[in-house]
Structure formats: structure tokens, C-alpha cells
Amino acid sequence: MVGTVRVSVASTIATALAWLLVSTPVAGQEGGGGGPAGFRAAPVAGCPQISRLFWPCAKAKAATFNPPRNPDGTPNMNGAWNPITANGSQNIEDFAGDAFLGRQISIIVDPPDGKVPYLPQWANKRQDNWDHYIDPIGSCFYTGVPRQVYGPRGQAFIQAPGLFAIVSEFAHQYRTIPTDNSPHIGDSLRLYMGDSRGRWEGNTLVVDTTNLTDRTWLSISGHFHSEALHVTERFTLIDPDVILYETTLVDPKVFRQPWTMAMPLVRFEKGHEVWEEPCFESDHDLPLLLQEHKLWFGLTPPR
Amino acid sequence: MRLGAALLLALGTLAPGASASAQTAGSPGASLPRASDGKPDLTGVWEALTTANDDIQDHAARLGVPAGQGIVEGNEIPYKPGALAKKQQNARNRETEDPEAKCFLLGVPRTTYAPFPFQIVYSPAYMAIFSEYAHTTRSVFMNSEHPPGPIEWFMGDSRGRWDGDTLVVDVVHFTDNTWFDRAGNYHSTDLHVVERYSLVTPDHIRYEATIEDPQVYTRPWKISLVLYRRKEANVRILEYECYVYAEEEAVRRGELGPK
Image (cartoon, rainbow over all chains, first blue to last red; front, side, top):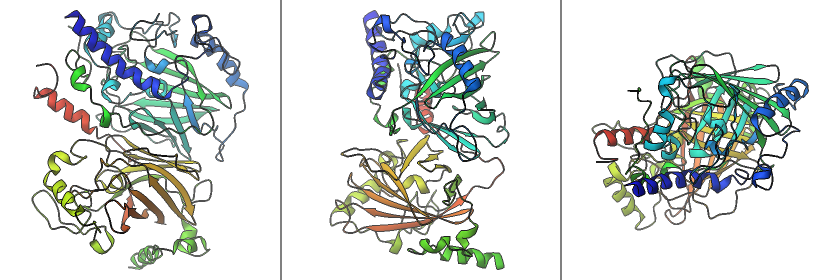
């Protein structure tokens, strides 16, 4: 029995890792050398990569950096961006690495312990998710928000007047973010990617996302939220090729306080194109995964 | 009445080859909204109003399917001898074999006239077309070359350029896993589509596509239709997560997952 479970988990992870490895040559090797001593050692835009060190350093740079601009005066973030320290969203907390998931240094900067501040009744739910459910992106469902930005394979940003769009290579998903002061859609409409509305605060794009479902996770390792999740994201150039990405999650049903992740998004090499990944169309191992794991169709209330 | 006449006049300029004159001062093109690079601004939410997803050719009504005038010029698809039999077989098996029935990406040009709204996002180097159906993204890279094949993508590889005020998109590198409609019209991996998007009023795009596939057709053939801007206040693309709903239903029925 144990052996069967292990095979099934391994195939889940193999599926996830296959995506990570296909077209993100940087993931897993960041920091140069890839060895334990060099893990995330190389600075990005003059700042350390590790989130708790990167965050204050990048905020200081953001305060003085004058970014290249679009014809409408907004900072120019057009291009393809790689969340080099997120390991394809395998984990968001500190993790030593095991047979299934790679090493991670927490990308959570607040609270300072780098852990998701779950309410006590949810203390064991992440482990339960990992043991019994397929990560929604493992069955080609949407990443949700904010995982889209730090999920596998990187994203392309397209800017037009009054609109910011994010295209993921993962499962050809996308998100459009009006920046025209338009209101959110009606509260009863629930979307995997929610309803995002953006505004410029100085050189920072601030995105407010509501109308989310509880059908997405925050990591392959099983971090989760409810449909009450409210996400704020901040995108700020600190260098022509580096964005400081900050996201704060509020969900009073699951978290005891708001919490924040921060990380660098680094521009892919010039000419990088986000190509089609027909995820569901070429997904043949779902019946195998389903022998021991369930599809995730939302958060089950705790017993 | 006068407005109607103006619209007809504007649509009249859509005749093939007429697009180059659209930039002339005083012509209808002079009043079109323009993007930062001076090109007609195609940004927005659009939708076709044909029944072409049921059948791209003229078709009579039947239960559940409204009648429709086709979008194929001359109403004839020039199948090679023997190729029509495959189309007819597809039609018979459509309830299980139509890629739409499997919740697969619909391909090009079907995504354009499928009954879902889509959004065009345009920047001078990179245009994207987002459909509500199964979060379909089409990336249109501007003024660049196709990567070398063979590559088989559901939505193909799209490269755009401007011909006067008309956006021309060249699409190759297709799988043979998509159809043109529920009637089983199909293509091979040699499919080559050249699309032309012409903004004729701020709220109408004349869409034309030339379809070429020497494995299946004796000659290139064309489709044309009009795309309409969705004008409702605060309209946005929502989500039609086809395969999620299908899997959820299969689990509910005990057809998918542990017994």
C-alpha cells in the first residue's frame, strides 16, 4: 500500500517537474553553480536574491530608479519575465528539499518567520492536501492569483493604454487587468483568475484582485486559501531588467493576518517568446494520478 | 437612414485590396481610433455573430442548430478527391470526435467565430488574442519570422504585420487535431492560414482568412465575416473552463477517479 502511494505521488511530482524542466533553464540553478554553497548567492540588480534580503534592498532602489517608459508615460514592463527564486511555485516556505520537491528559501517576507499564518483550525490542511489531492495545476487547471506570477515557466506582460495583460506559458492561461478606473464585476461572479483592476501609484502598478474561487492553490506543496481571498500585487521596476514583485494576501477565513510575498522578476533574454503549452490537450496520466489522489474542486471545511 | 448609409459605405471599403487607401484624409479610416504606433486600435472585446461554429457552409436548421449562411466565399470547400469522405465521417462522429466536444483548443480560424467573446490586446511588438473558451491564448508576434518547424501547435504560430491599415497574420505549425466546425470540416498539419483584420468602424472588424492545405484541398479558399465590438458597460472576458466542468461531472458520476 505504501509503495503504491509512493509511486502515485512520484508520478504527480514527475508531471509537475516535467513542466518545470522543459523550458525554465534558470529554475533550480539560480545563484550560479547550483551547489548548496551558491544557492541564490548571485545578486539581482545589486540586491541579494533571497526574499527577506531582497525586499528592503529593492524597495530602496525603487524609490530612486527612473524607469524606461511607454508612450503614455507608464513604466515600460513589456516583455517576458522569470520569477527566478520561486522554483515554479513548488514551495513558498523554507524547505530543505526531498525526493519530490526542490530546496526553497521562503519567499514570504511578512510575517518575518516566513510561514503562511494559517488559523489554528487549518494547521494540518496543507499536509492533507499534499497527501490526498492533485495540485490543481497538475490537472491543467488555472494557477489562480497571485500564483500566476510566480508559477512555472514565466510570463509575458503586454501593456496598452488602460490595460495590462499577463500571458503565461503554463496551460496558455492569461489575465487581463484594466487600468482605467473601472469597477470590479458583481460579487456573485467567481473566477479562477478573479477580477483584477490596476492603478498606477507613481512608478508602481498596484493590482487589486477580488471575485476569486477556493479552487486554486498557492504552491505544488498544497498551500491554499478560501474564496474570501483578496489579493493586492505591486509591480515596480528597480532596473530596466528587474521588477520588484510584492503580493499581499488577505483571507480572514483561512489566515490569521494579512501576509506578503516579495521576489524579483528577471527579464528573459531578448527575443524570448512565450509559446503554446497545450496542457490538458496532451495530459494523458490523469487516470494514473487519480488512483490515489483526488482532483481539487475547492476547499473542504475542516471537520 | 443616413447612419446606415455611412456604415454601408465604410463596409464597402473592405473589399480586398482597398485597405491601403484607408489612411487617406477624409476617408473613413481617418476617424478610426489609433494605437500608440498610429495603427488602427484593435484593442477591445469582440465577438462574431454567425453560426459558423456549427457549420462554416450554408446550412439548414435542425433540432438545436439554427440555420445559417456560411462564411466560405462561394460556399464551396475544394476538398481533394477522397478528402470529402473524411469530413463526412467526422460529421457522423462529431459528438465524441469534435475537438470542441473534448474541450480541446479550437485552433485557427475557429477560435475567431466560436460563440465566445475574445479580447485583443495590442502593443506594437506583441499582440495577444484571449478567448473566454478554455482560457485560450493566441500570441501574435509582430514583424518577426516563424520559428523553424516541424512544430505542431493547436493554435499554430502567428506572425503579424501591417499592410496599410490592415493587420495581416500569417499562421503555420498546426496539429491536425482541430476542426473548422461541428460539421467536421478539417485540415492537416500542412494548414496555412493568412488572416486579415480591418477595422472599418470603431466597432466593426472585417475578418478575412485564406486557407491553404495542399494535402486536403485542391486550391486555397477564403472565409470572411464581421466581428462586433462588445459595448456593454464594464464588459469583460469571463471563464468557460470546459474540461474542469467535464471532469467534475465525470467524478460526480463515478466515471473518473477511485471506485
